[in-house]
Image 1 (tube, one colour):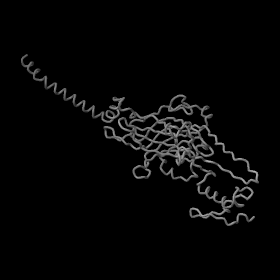
Image 2 (image 1 turned 60 degrees about the horizontal axis):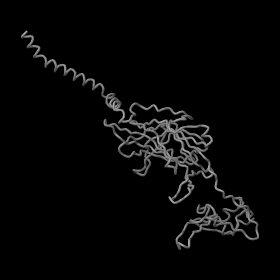
Image 3 (image 1 turned 120 degrees about the vertical axis):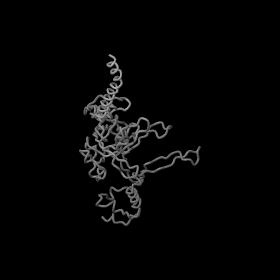
Image 4 (image 1 turned 90 degrees about the horizontal axis):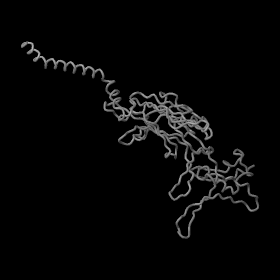
Length: 368
């Protein structure tokens, strides 16, 4: 068994590759089951696979038309198998495209903590009108958003808001599948494979200008940074964990905890801008039908039931509740000053009335 000792070698990228690295007793590949072709040809294909240049043995041919000489009309990808005339060819390889699985991802936004405050009210206090947008990779047209937690003075936002995403998933390749037309002239939609990434964005709502993006994060739901159980433990260090400690929601099925959001536009380095508490659950289409749940807090409000958040009294829409605005921002803080000023004005008015009526009263008493 000296067949793998033949001195066939290829140097690529500064590394030397030999046949024994790919076909040997150690790799359990023997001449009986090796690919047909010379040692040089097989080794060249091994090296291309090793470098990630050729995932499969495809041939690519450019298509031309006599009416448009020299102008490519597209490309044709072929899988070419050539066998010796005197040998029986092996069974054909199954090249039927893998079937996708219908999956449903449910994300419940519970709370935000320590979100940066980007606005000021007329009292000079920092605040933000917080809401979230979430979408899957390649599916931004199906992006969903929560309602708005108005007038957050601490960076805390309460939502209890459910988002449901239906998608096709290739389990063997761990890829999302979307269907798009690459041009307006394309008659049929083409399958586009995307990494299974979840995009989370935290915004400050503005009425007269565009909403301010306060922070964001994205991660693969098959390699998620582990969440923390409390907001206090949540930090950017979660994104530095090794791959061996990352979590796949495909295996866990459901997970809940805190993830940090950040902003890296100013310095290029991630700066913590908030923490979001999420519950992420994945299920098949059949399981989703057995456990129905509506978007947001709409019916069917089940699995789990989401109550309206218990938001503080400062959370309101500025233009819809002027009396509440006055109560929260003025009366609650300055009511004793207002009462004292009112009493002082009342005393002054009373004294002024006495002074105004005193001459007449004195004259009447004297004359009478």
